[in-house]
Amino acid sequence: MDGLESERQIRVYLHIGLHKTGTTSFQRFCHDNRSVMLEQNLVWYQPMADGLNAHEVPLSVLRDGVVPFPSWYTSPADVGERLQQIIRAHPGKDILISAEALSFIRSAEECERLRSLFGTWVKDCDFVVLVVMRERGDWWSSYSNEIMKTPLGPSKEPASYRCLNPNGWLTDFETMLRTYRSCFRDVRTIAYSKSDVIPPLLAELGVAIPVGYQGERLNRRDPIPRIRSWYKRNLAKTFLGRIWRGLKRVVDV
Image: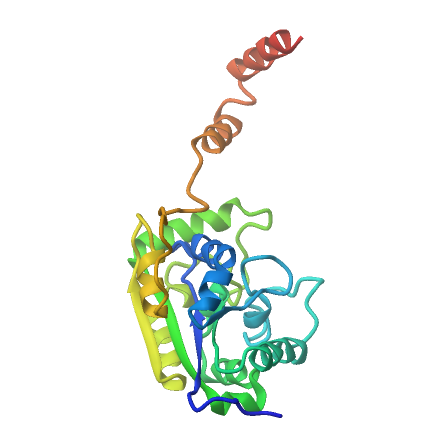
């Protein structure tokens, strides 16, 4: 039977990124502490494919050409059924969905498709959108650098999330926020912190920080891969690079 067996509305938290704002660290924390969060009335939405990012949700709502469809993705109907099953399985519990590609939304139509994933349950949901905001230039430097390192690299297609136009839609945070605010009553922004973004996000969720918690940051640059990357770019094909490889073979023998 549709409808909640509770007098209170279920609160659906949509954590939408941005990219490069500690999202992976936050998702890892939520995944690892999902039982603790459940005790505090919050259900962590377990993604379909990978263990952290609910990529199927933005795939179901974004306009064509923004992100490609992976082989495992099926349909918006399947994603909607999964969401609704979680609501049915946890009556009265709040839900947290974290998917940074939801920050790519730029139209009311996309927001409405997002709402429609909840089916008839949408009337029982009180949506709260959480977005971690980072200074635009700093964000763009980090984001574009990440795209440059991916196997696919930048794209020339204007609609793509890999199109590195600093004046394009990707950096139009104002439209993103305005669009969300036109469709969802409660949109909250959290200032990005390089130290640890998890505590302020937990505060917005009303979740207590676990005893013994130590701040963490995944995807923080490991100096060894950076050194290797620099070596491959600058020294690998030079005379010094050939000497290094020769000495390494001698040592390995």
